[in-house]
Image (tube, rainbow, N blue to C red):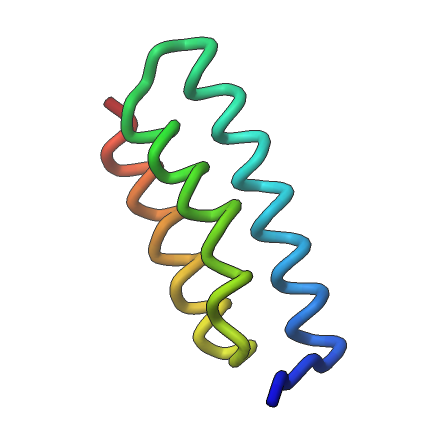
Length: 70
């Protein structure tokens, strides 16, 4: 039912930690794009079990936070 591989766990933990940091930073500075992106990065690995999709979605969200911080 669940496909829990080491790559899925590592990528999920990595993007969740980056998301948590971005969420805290965005809330303190009032940047909406960073706050929303951090929230997405923190939550989405729970719903995606494919490591390639985790890497693609996480990279897209990080690039979006960089391009649209406000």
